[in-house]
Image (cartoon, rainbow over all chains, first blue to last red; front, side, top):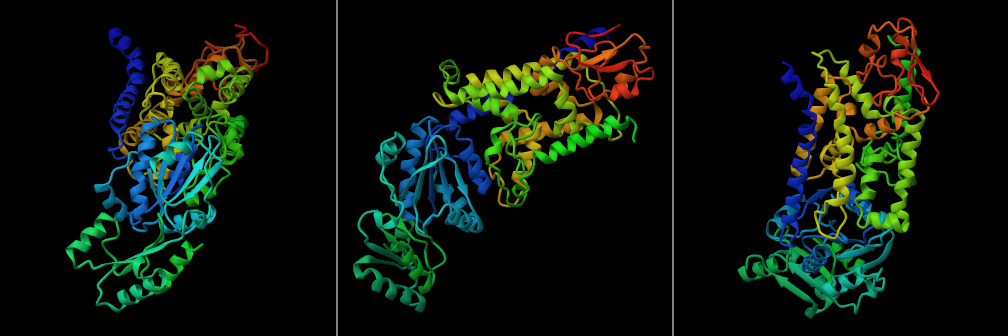
Length: 271
Length: 296
């Protein structure tokens, strides 16, 4: 009985040491994740974004706003992810999806596309609130840089290269392209996807040609396997036809599904 | 007036007022956001998660871990870097409370302590926790609040992690982890292993609190360990005089199950004062005489 009690008296040691189990699991899991090809965590909601920013703990923060349908965004994400992975935790990078109202779209996208940095998804209401609060234009991608104190130092519209992000995060001064017109020449390009026999598709094509000229419009018929493959390679939506997506250089507007929406999207991109 | 008189009512009111004062950002519960205003520079004297949606103050244990886990913390402290020196402010704040009255904040302010006391009221078989287990919290303080956050690096060259928050703190799971996951639009989608682990820890602590007196405070809480150590030297403490008849009624009502009549300067005492009202011969008192342990 006394021996039994003696054992019980020392049980607090294994009890406390038991908490080392999740530490070991977490550390080993993290080292597996420390490669750009590994899928990072997905967090839903604005509070997740706020937590990630507040947890940056004195590190510079890069916040990239993107959407699965935004071709330049998808081209740029691996570049940002590479800088993030190579920083070995020296920076906090967050990819915020503010352009996919349906979470399923993002989940499907992640099945074929991996980024190691945390991805935050916002529903439409949260995305609108955040865009108003942070005064974000209605184009993508947008990248914000925050300094170690959490203050915004630079705002970039449109996609950039890996060298750009490396310079930005190593403290090289950057122009603040806080309006779309600052970003290069204004050359409008519109991708239209839909059945050409449909009247709405025709309306979108006509308006697109009127806005961007014949050379500035690409038309994709989803019934054509080649066009469908092209849509896929450009990460353009494979549903919700017809639509027209306007882009200026490497910043794109939301896919529009009516002439009014297209006019608004183009206006948002206009200088 | 209740079983333990006016002091107990006053203590419960103080706990509730403290809880309300530290949670003024009610909006956080409506839109699943976290308050990030200036008051978060200051700590609540208790275990209350920084990420609780309504919290307007920081958790002292979370803040300490955040600082000691930053890259180059010790060098920064040696060279006087302001962000590293800020830890002295938190330690000073905690030590000031501890040197004045030991674990008084555990008894009068800490919301997680109050929760455990309320859980213990649920009728169930009651189980004593061995007194030796109290040492556990000192190991938690050293290992999970200081040593691991300072030394363990998941990514070489980067900052460390707040391991007490990540793998133990049930208050964080209750006040931030679970609510943020459950609240619409604010849930962590891929919650993973750590969330499951911490949920299990919280459930076990809740169940344990129903059967044993404030078990987390006594066995695992690093804040209690911190204040317990400083409480050994505190100005305000308990005194038991010669009239004590060793009836042990003080231990029966003690929320942390200590025999104050045997050890008036116990590091475990949370200065709640329950024993004072319960003593049949009025042998237990508060005293402000530094260094005096007992008149017996």
